[in-house]
Each structure stands twice: as structure tokens, then as C-alpha cells.
Length: 226
Ligand SMILES: CC(C)(COP(=O)(O)OP(=O)(O)OC[C@H]1O[C@@H](n2cnc3c(N)ncnc32)[C@H](O)[C@@H]1OP(=O)(O)O)[C@@H](O)C(=O)NCCC(=O)NCCS
Image (cartoon, rainbow, N blue to C red; front, side, top):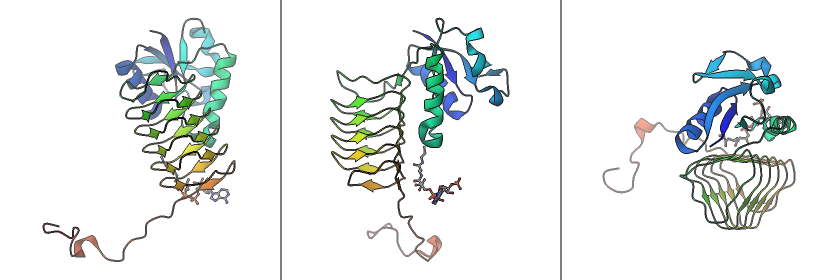
């Protein structure tokens, strides 16, 4: 068990505290935020201290850090705080849900946040500072590099490479053996069939309203009872 300070006091930090408390050997002992974001001295009944002076109250030898920061600025905000934490000498933990499916030989780098119902097939490699929100399929022999956000219900088929700083939106689908170039933004519901250029953005077509009201619909189902 290690004593852990969590970065943030927003909903993701609150979730991290919940998951670490209920589903990990770690003991959350406090929270840290950028000084400009200091609002309350406590959160979840634990101390909140400025990140800039964290070492004054929580020395690197006494605690580990976990930085479950969002995908803001294509994961650069999180990567930046991770770099600062490491420069201060802190060890970073990773959380892999016991409700995720992994196989012998699976390992990930530091500061990964891997939630329930991810299916991570054999021979997948996951780098550092990767968030796999709930319910993704990560196909065999795929490589997810550092500082990546995979949201939910994303299908990464076998043998893909997801380069650093990518964002994969909900329900995105990546064809097998595809390289998603550095910092690609794959929007919600997008299907990618070919390698992507670095820094590219893919946006799905939005469904359009059918032009009649739901209380005027003749039948939802073709079969009786619809
Ligand atoms: C791809 C996606 C991001 C596009 O979003 P959108 O709102 O439909 O697209 P918009 O064209 O309105 O642009 C989005 C942003 O890019 C900016 N933008 C658009 N075109 C731009 C351009 N040519 N240059 C620079 N910025 C541009 C817009 O200003 C907007 O920023 P703002 O919100 O600060 O105003 C969105 O469809 C998507 O899939 N998001 C992921 C959703 C998701 O998976 N969420 C799960 C989170 S857990």
C-alpha cells in the first residue's frame, strides 16, 4: 500500500479517490491543486495543498502522486503536471480497475487510469499517462503511447498504434493495424480506416431530425407491440 496524493478537486479527482479507496491497495491522504485553483482547505475530508509547495507538507519520500487530469489541450495540461511532479522527485502510481480484463504479462506505465470493463487483449502495450475510461476494446498487439485519452466504448482493433497525445472520442472505431498519428483528435462515433496525419481532427456527421414529432410516430417497431 502507498500513501497517495491526488491532483485535483473536481469530479475526476473525486472519482479517482473513490476508485483508489474501494478498489486498490492505496490510501489517499490528500489532494493538491495549482495554487490559483485553491478554493477550500479540505476535500473529501482530506487536506488540499498547493501543488507548487506540495513538498513542504508531503515529501516525495513519504507519498506517491496520482494526476487524473482531463484531456484539456490534447492531454498537454496533464502531461505538463506529470513532468513537474516527476521533476520534483515524486513516484506516480497507476490505477487499473479489478473490473478490467487483462491477461498475464500486461503492464502499463505510470500515471495510467484504467477503468472498469476495458478489455485489454494479450500483447497490448500501454505507455505512461494514459487514460482508458470505461468499456473499451483494445485489440491484441496494439500499442498505446504516452499521454493518450481513450474515452468510452472505443474499439481499437488488433495491431494498431496510437501515438502520443491522441484523443479518441466515445464510440470511435479504429480498423486493425492503423496508426493514429500524434495528437490526432478522433471525434465521437468516428470510424477510422486509414492511418491519420499528426494533429488531424475527425468529426462524425451528426444525425438529423426526421421531420416529424415522436408523438406522431406510427410505430417504433415493425412488429406488433411497437
Ligand atoms: C470532433 C468534435 C470535438 C467537434 O466538436 P464540435 O463542437 O462539433 O465542433 P465545432 O466545429 O463546434 O468545434 C469545436 C471547437 O473547435 C473550434 N474550432 C472549430 N473549427 C476551428 C478551426 N478551423 N480552427 C480552430 N478552432 C476551430 C471551435 O471554436 C470549438 O471551440 P470552442 O468550443 O472553444 O468554441 C466533437 O464532434 C467530438 O466528437 N467530441 C468528442 C466527444 C466525446 O467523445 N466526449 C467524451 C468525453 S469523456
